[in-house]
Image (cartoon, rainbow, N blue to C red):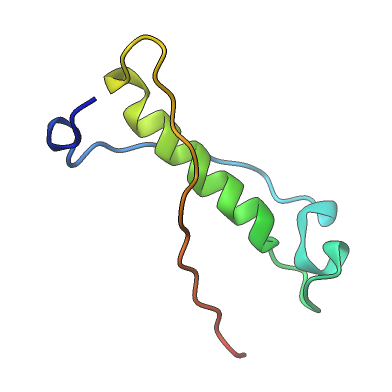
Length: 73
């Protein structure tokens, strides 16, 4: 796969957030919002769907770096 061939590719991933998917349920926060681990999984899924058609037979992708910033509320 050549990166310049896929600039602008769009991938979509969606989920319905259930009570067990929240930061509160995972013990990683005190608000009933989507946990960071599920958010990263959702974003990675969108990335994979964006470039899947451009991968050669036998090629795959892997998560390398995520840069998330958290807000104080």
